[in-house]
Length: 504
Ligand code: ZN
Image (tube, rainbow, N blue to C red; front, top):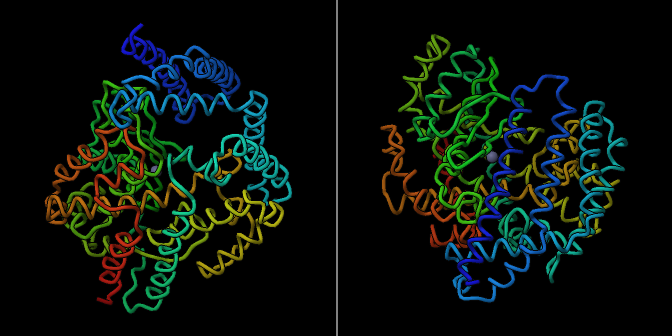
């Protein structure tokens, strides 16, 4: 059989697996949008059955033989071509799965199901003691996994690589340290500034019916296509792709806090724009798949923050939003809303943090994860390490573990090495905006006209069209011409916020 025939066979197999995965994703979307209370047990059975089938397909020895054959042939030679990337990424995935004994995979899956249940209860009851044994078990299992996968890298890198292929903690540590120092300094400066926003406009009650209309309108305005997606509501907003022409976003509205729904929508629509821009012909295969979590987050943050918290954006959309919220914003103006959108204040909870301090929340988690994986910190001592860093970096001391180390679901779900992708997203977004400005010129005047097309087209060409043909670091470097760097993000925040806070 020719290599092309083998690749066609492999692609067919993988695409069918993707059909099963998208079916599973549809069941999960349904579960999070309105599953009847008593239907949970049967839904778990459905999802478990599909997981088993998907796992068997992914570890099918024939698939491994075919991929190894292809990796020696001419189609694999150009690693970043669509065919070459398909062979390279699929083989890497296959070998990763093959290196992990079923007993470990099952132990991890069980530990994370129990871990999430325990976390929920422990957080609710503010009881670290209940969660600690689960966290110890999860860290120990993922350490075993990392030992099986690590190839000369640190154990932490073996996990990081699963979310951000090719990223190295040593490089991230350096860049993040630059960022940390600059941001701590900036937060200090802003706290002493003469003209602070007070956030009052965001507290005006806006009926949820009106917020729904605004959200749909703004998602459509930035280019999200409702013929290939939809917008729903849930308790923890997310974006999920159920097929090449079916990418769904979800947000959460609060009557007394307008940005929850509005920025939630802009964020998830940013993820959605990326998914809608991936090559549909390659659905389920690497060229039709996002490059990494960091790149995905760069797209959501770009629309949420760099566009949606800019002065020109609010100049443009204020009159229409004010009209749609039906009197709730009487007496406000674009400037007031823009200023409140850029309020910076250290706080305890990551998901409620502003654009600046958000990264400090992430750095704390990144540092603790690395110390735990390297055996420099014991799980039992993690709450103290957490609290000490909050005091040091943010100047606040968590009054409880509930608002401290127990606030995030990630570790209980086994997601270790995942947090840094959030800050990578912010760094990439700043680099991308800087490069787009250089290529297109005058982004802000475009925002002031509500013209987002040129920026979206630029992202489509530079990022979306490549799917996972390049490693994330390489993809961003090709788009921007520069390697990972904290400076664009620091410059952007400093220049915008010194204007808002009246220091420029
Ligand atoms: Zn996101």
